[in-house]
Length: 74
Ligand SMILES: [Zn+2]
Image 1 (cartoon, rainbow, N blue to C red):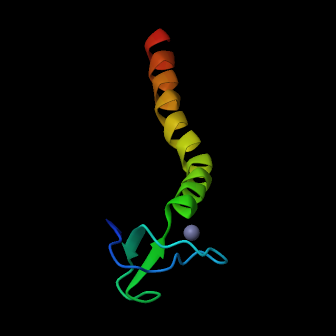
Image 2: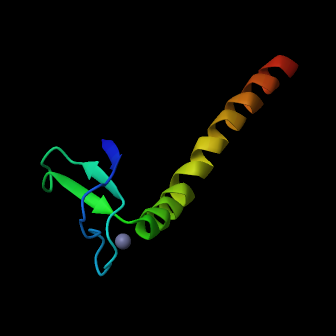
């Protein structure tokens, strides 16, 4: 997936949002050529993603570290 700063005057594709899009994503024709989101919706989406994704990404290395330490102690 490719993200670009949107130079065209396109409306944000988020349901009910009337802002102009700031970021465009190339979907390679999956929905249509590209989808566009404004800064506000991007932030809201990023908040949602970070709640889902970041804790897992942070937890993963700790688990392996704990495992390594346990192996070293025994
Ligand atoms: Zn928006």
